[in-house]
Image (tube, rainbow, N blue to C red):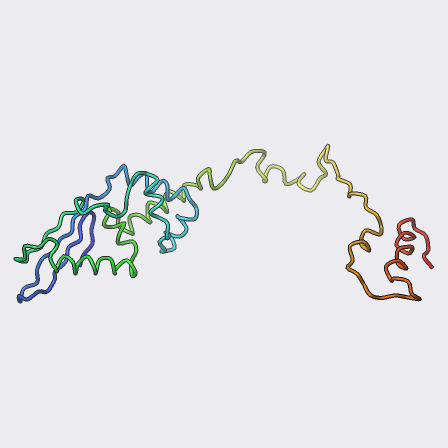
Length: 210
């Protein structure tokens, strides 16, 4: 079996000594359609990283669907089926076997479906690499403004004018005691927390709790 742009061809051994020639045709995407798809894939850091590492994103079909494209035929009318066998049934068992093996091949090489739609793996990855090397899209790099870092290294650690230093909120010195869970410890019949409260108040005012 061989997968190419818009065509899956195979030689299927039947009852005769000579294998039958099978072809499954599909209208592949055009250049402009692939240009849009590659731009969308390169513009998303997650999809680009997955593809360039040799992995196929599970939801990649959503990218094509967003462009009005489908990786898989919606109806049988979108396919052209041919087999050199004398069977009158369409699809014949040789075409059915090719369909089965083609679908099974996705487990080993999920890029096969993209090749069938008109873009070989090496060609696709080269285009994505070129698009990414020209600089990350605006969605990835965000808005950039201000002076370059190299131009302000001399004053990088200097205090900035008008910088406001926030003051910590004022809290009671005994707030920590109030957040403690109930402690079943008493000293001379008085709860431990109540005995500690005067000491915390004294520390707040700088007194000597002793």
